[in-house]
Each structure stands twice: as C-alpha cells, then as structure tokens.
Length: 287
Image 1: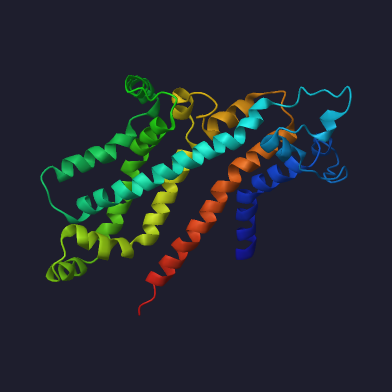
Image 2: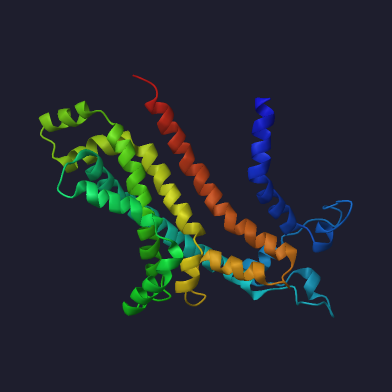
C-alpha cells in the first residue's frame, strides 16, 4: 500500500514533466491522435534545435508549409533561462549571506528593539505584493535600474529575506545553549561562534532555505513582468507566459520550452536535496 501511495505521488509530481518531454519530441498530429499512439510518427528533437539554434524543424522546411506555428518567443527561452538562473542564484546567495547572520542575531542575541523589528520582519510579507508594484516601480525607475537584472535581484531578495530569517531563526534557536557557552569559554566572539559552531550544525537547513529562496525567485512573475526590460534582461516566467498566450504556437514547441524551463530547477533540487538529506541523516546519528 505504501508503494502504491508513493507511485501515485510520483505520477502526480513527475507526470506533467514526463508528458511535456514526450510532447516535445513527437509531432503535433501524434499528440492529438486518438486512440493515443504517440510514437507512430517517430521522435525528433527539431523543436529543441530551433529553440537553441534557430534552425526550422524539417516539417516547416518543405515548400508551401505553413510556418505560422513557429513562435519567435521560443528563441528567447535560452537567454531568459540564463537570466533567471543568474538572478535566482544571486538571490539565494544573498539570502544565505544576510539571512543567516540576521536569523542568528534574532535567535541568540539580546538587543534593543529585537522583538519589534522581528515582528516587523514577519509582518512585511503579509502586505499584498500587488500593492507594492507602483512604489517599487517608481523606486527602481528613480535609481535608473528599470529593466535590469540588478533590480530583480533587489526586489526578489526583499521578498524572500523575511522568510529566510524567520525559518533559520527557528533552527538557530533549537541549538543547545551549552554549545554557545563552550564557545564563549574558548574565547569565541559571537561572530566566530556563528561561523565555527552554528553554521556547520544547521548546514542542511541553510541549503534547503537557500534552495527555497532560489525557487521563489525563479518562479516569480508579477515583478519580473512589471519591471522587466528588453529581451536581453527578460526573465523566464515572462517569456514562458508570452509563449503560452500565443495561440498559434505549436504544441511541440511549447512543450519543449516548458521542459527546458523545468529541468534546470529539477537538477538543482536533486543535487542540493541530496546534501540536505545526507546532512540530516548524519545529524541524527550520535557518534
């Protein structure tokens, strides 16, 4: 019964990705065939070749073939993917570099205004994002950052840092006080204790929280659309939305773009989560 449940969860989670890949390597007539016979017409990677090189699929190179199903927006996917990876990776790094020390300070240190500022940090994400578009737009425009990746890094960092600080403060707060007292006896400053004692102990949690910040930035659309600029700085959600709204685009090309957009994040999740799970298992075994 447990295996059946695991299989159902896997199909629910991975099914759309698998179907997107299948839809990207078979012709459109195979996708709509009934009864389903997806591989009757063979498979090809012409859609991927067009996205990365601009070479038209063979089916559209024949004389008199209609090319209305080819969308130029698909050619923007590789560049937009790179932009999103750069922005999201930078956001995750900022969350770890700034959110980690902030969470440690709130969890372990006592200072004036600690409770008030922490409550403000928690309440900040409750403000509807749509209410912040105009203020953020005016600020970004005032500083001359409109349409740049730097503006997206700043906005996404502001959006994700409260969550990172809140989650990591919980993990920092669970570490026994005896470890901190031992570090003080050895002459460690609070910062040295943070680097040498606390960071290694919650490393899996740091990686998981950084990954979550990455995914929030990678999938964010509203600010990316409102503050985005030319195709050179456009992020992946904006390009994918433009492609999905194009009613003339072929299903194969759309599925190829979807699969390209999903795969990098899946690979990152697999790699990072492996270290997270190994760290959790290592921490659960007493030496």
